[in-house]
Image (tube, rainbow, N blue to C red; front, side, top):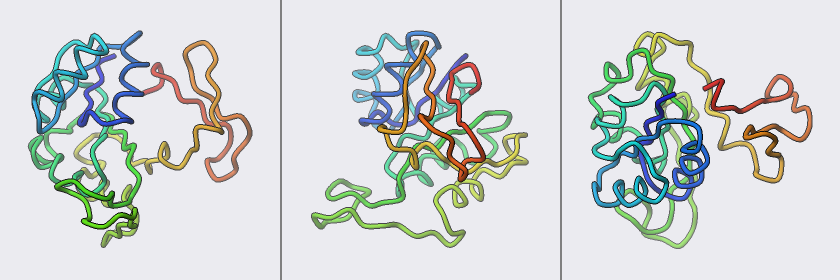
Length: 175
């Protein structure tokens, strides 16, 4: 499977490193040097711009700061660029201290969106008609690492979680 990452921060590094062992990975972002550094570190198939990552991937992982998601989607070419793609959002809807897209204070501040949640905001930016797939809420940011267990290269929830509708199985084969 071809997975295009938009972003190269901590979460992109963790997921892309793991998935690069079994999948084709492309790292894209605003800073070509940072994207290339991560791509080299994980032996990815390539690196480049945000639009390059979206063009490359069957699956697109939004791994930008939450308040940079809209810019990233527009940089890729808007909703049409995501046609027939699976989009996974791994963001937390908070503004981080420091950085060009973040707050100037020293605290993590919640971000609100007109649509409600960040997942709903992304679904409004990339509607199901654009992807050809139903909209699913982003759930990875709501699962703590302490609740996940790795077996055979796949991630599982340690227990049944009624909020997710049963046992959640996260696998590169299901992406």
